[in-house]
Image: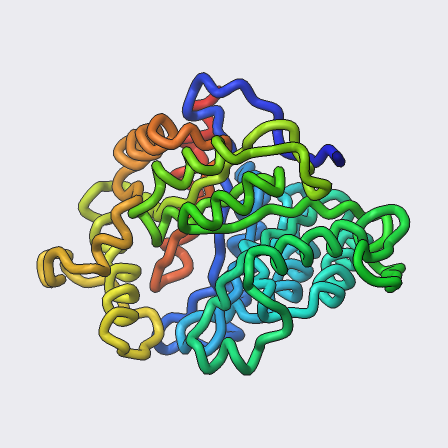
Length: 346
């Protein structure tokens, strides 16, 4: 079993939990993908300065409001403009890729940027069925997914060779890139546990099975499989975050993601829309239910909600998701949260 750089922490104080960022490189109305990528890199620099622990990019396809399709390229660019923060995928949707290509890409990144690269892997396609078929390169079945992870670990090993075929990857040999399993249900949790890998829970958009998934992950966790990389369960949980100077301001800015999720449910394809009066949004509905895991408000309000979430989940790390129509609003949210959380944890 290979040890990997996850912080060793005795869970006592919620504010000692590291904060991370999940970036989907959102495109606002009137902006372009180029604008969104530039704003994302500005946020990466700021996150690095503020003390965030990880910055991950999520893979999505066939969307008009997200520019996070070529994950490895975004990881490389973000790593090149930062100095300290870990950068990785949250995640690479493995069925869309040949595992060897993933090993070569992330091994190359590790050779370029050292021990700062993470590889989070998911089984979902991150898109619709038609696009998934166009992208498909490997199977999403649990056993095939596990075998692909084992092969990836072989390509990241000193030998740089797959466990299932006589193929060597010099680009990834000896890089030992840490692998996480992403999931939103008990099925993903069970796979992560059985493989002995850290688990990143997509609770920011899939709140229904949070408690069950965490329990299943802990109950099924094993170090017996050759894929095991850690000695005990390790969980990172996702939460939607928008911090502003006042609760009212934060709630208004949060309507950006509320509108986006409502568009997903109705099939409307739009770039991110400006914030609106929260009172004008339709109440309830599936979109609001999907976003119920949130920390929205002033620094005091948001940190209290984050603390409650840590207490509920026992998460070892949190990964925050912040959408904003104006990139400066997102940067302000990152700054206010960092000041409140990191200073409060000292």
